[in-house]
Amino acid sequence: MSLLTVEQARSIMVSAILPLGSEAVPLSEADGRWLTEKITAERDQPPFSASAMDGWAIREADAVTGRELLITGESAAGHGLRDPVQPGQAVRIFTGAPLPLGAERVVLQEDTDPKDDHVTITGALGTARHIRPRGGDFVTGQILLAPGQRVNPWHIALAAASGHDRLICGRRPRIKILATGSELVEPGQPVGHDQIFNSGTPSIAAFVRRHGGIAGLRPAMGDRLDAIVAEMATDDYDLLITIGGASVGDHDLVKPAALRLDADILVNKVALKPGKPVWFARFPDGRPVLGLPGNPASGRVCAELFLGPVIAALQSGVAEVPMELIALAGPMAANGPRDHYVRAEVIVTEDGQRRVRPFSDQDSSLVTVMAAANALIRRPPHAPVMGAGERVQVLAAGV
Picture 1 (cartoon, helix red, strand yellow):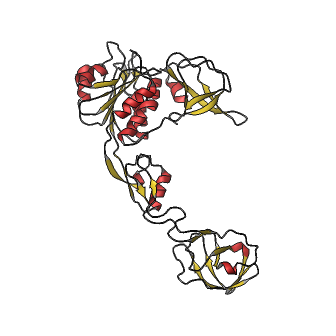
Picture 2 (tube, rainbow, N blue to C red):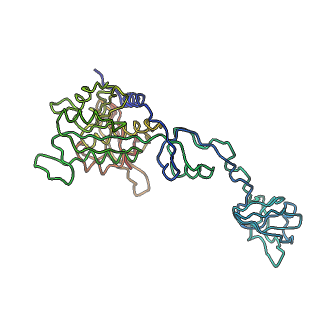
Picture 3 (cartoon, helix red, strand yellow):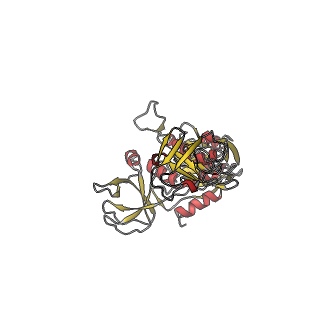
């Protein structure tokens, strides 16, 4: 049976996700959340014509070098002047302050000479009037943010400027992380000579939190089928992530455990290196399970390519897997029949050029290489030999 491509597998996973619904989120807690309702402006911004500079508000007919004008008041931010500006008058005005009625220009303070109750225009005036018009940023009813966008700090500023104190966002998914393998011991616990520390659970939990999920960690389960089934059967999660036990050995028990609970396996294996054993299923109640390989590099690659988009879909969002083209720092060998995501580092050369350099050892068990990599080079199936300076697809992963 032919393996699914990365794109085919991701499409199947995301299409099988049922979004979790929405909730109102205070602005202070909305960073990183996915919008499910549009945000429209509650008022014009600015809500009045305002000065863009410190200076003097005058009528356009009085904008003549050498003219002396009577000072009649002051307009400051939050304390605008109600009286209109008449011909031959000037109002002291500050940046952001409302423009008085009748004013058509702001003369910069450095182009004037105030003395007692008069101010004289001394500088040469250009065409700029230094006025921010009402609604120059946005107007009442304008759509500012659309459903499906992931909120960032500048979206929060936009929502606040338009009068919103909370946003309607997708509910954060509860994600249980279940690592298997009798060789795993939790960090900080006594470890035998034939055992290793569980590095998968804490790293995937950090990835889950970074993408908006609520991570529920369980100690490594060992290779006990009944215990794995019992953990899968609980109702305390919206997405189950398993780590390890995804291959076909006698001790690879996560898929048999899922099948005991009548899971429908939608993705069995993917034409991917590292990460071929990744799998995805859905339980009868609709809840998904994503099976990640146990090797650190395989888990990281599969998290970037599949877990991020799945978590986004649960929150009614669409997470892209953005690629950019970067020149190689050195040659790369030809690729085999699977998509290969090569651990690499993006560097800046002495002449200021960005280059990407693959690590020489791509063993998927190496945690040091995984931690040092700030990028993944995508090598399509059967990609030819490439030389230094040639551009390759790069995923900026985990940075």
